Image 1 (cartoon, rainbow over the protein chains, first blue to last red):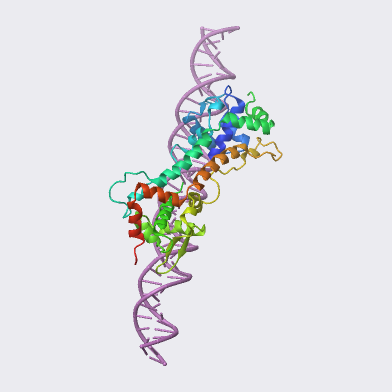
Image 2: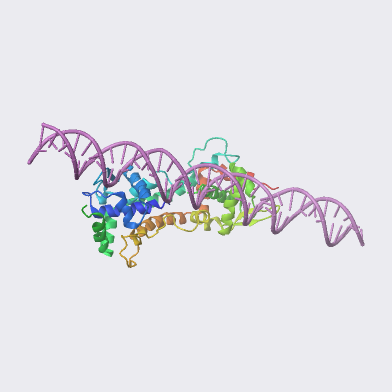
Length: 157
Length: 157
DNA sequence: GCGAACCTACTCGGATATGGGATGTCCGAGTTCTCGTGG
DNA sequence: CCACGAGAACTCGGACATCCCATATCCGAGTAGGTTCGC
């Protein structure tokens, strides 16, 4: 899985700490965890295209969450970065070569069905968790983390 | 996900049709679906290293299932090809840069935990399905498939 | 005729090229604020 | 003192390199069976 997913998730969490009123530049989000700024910017662009965050250009611009953290699931973020297509791609090899019966099969590929079943379980689990739930867990486990994030990222210019 | 997973799953299914008595060469398994023989051989080697299949060299050699199809899960095959490491790799970016509190955190990374939870769901679903169950479903849906497989792959030399 | 050594055919196993996507970088497009200038 | 316009600074957005892994291929290692030669 792409490393950018981790960056995007942590960045969404940080944007949630700051709140939707103030926009945070990609450079600030990158500096917070010592990441390459231009590349993180690329990931944030993907989030913007997916409608997870808003982007504003010019001074005072940056990125903000596009909706309430309770309405942003982990699946939204993962799909924004990795793409909508499923990990396992059935290429229907059963229809090629002597193994194919010649006629097009009336039944779906059962190998594909089995793999899809697992992938649906994965996606369901991701869709059941929101950024807001992550926020709450972090607040309970380490209350200083949101404070530090707001100080570093939400400081007035 | 690697395309070889699809090949390995179908090949395991075909080896299950033939049965453990007769070894099937990689070239035969490849020709059955019109796949590149040398590359499929590489995937089968991975299955052999993982203990899913036995390999025998020389004339009359080839690959056989190492144990009963009911004791080979889809997870076994996927792990053999893709490797044992998880798809989402937490690199602990929270411990880098100004975002880190300076001291090593006592709590685990909750983003990692959330992603791992989804991945466990995926693996559980794969571990719950065996090659034998796939065999049964295919036999019910398309009984001619195992017949063709035995004819093409299990034919006496 | 019989046995053993050799030889050939067959198959796996790992070392070796190649291409596409993830990773990383750079400069242009667009926006906002500031500063200076003229009325 | 106020309005307006030009300029500068800031930030996103997409185009351009680079690297690594999945893909693909090839030849050597090892085995089984047949074949031939000698006794």
